[in-house]
Length: 109
Image 1 (cartoon, helix red, strand yellow):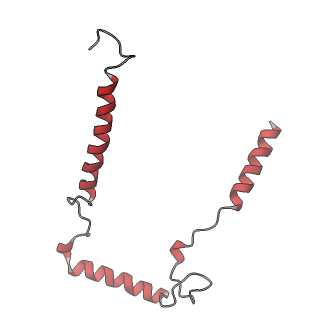
Image 2 (cartoon, rainbow, N blue to C red):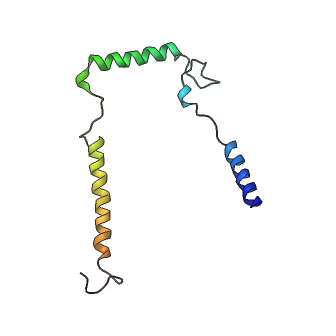
Image 3 (cartoon, rainbow, N blue to C red):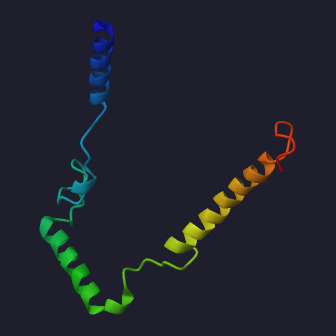
């Protein structure tokens, strides 16, 4: 009992040493680009202005939609249909292959 608790605590300690905070959301913090990874021209004000420009462009062009091509082959439904065809074909091959063979029950199909 004590051994498993000790090993669990040791594992948690070793695992937590490798965990670092995510800095991806802080990219562009207005730094010089060398120390904090931020782009020098992306201050908070520039980021807020860019977000405001995106909202204005979306409201000025309502017919453009979100830009996600749902029916294209590289869109949502197209990729879903392609994936369904591939995995469905593989599942069908396994199904029909499993009905025959050495271990199939005789007289059941």
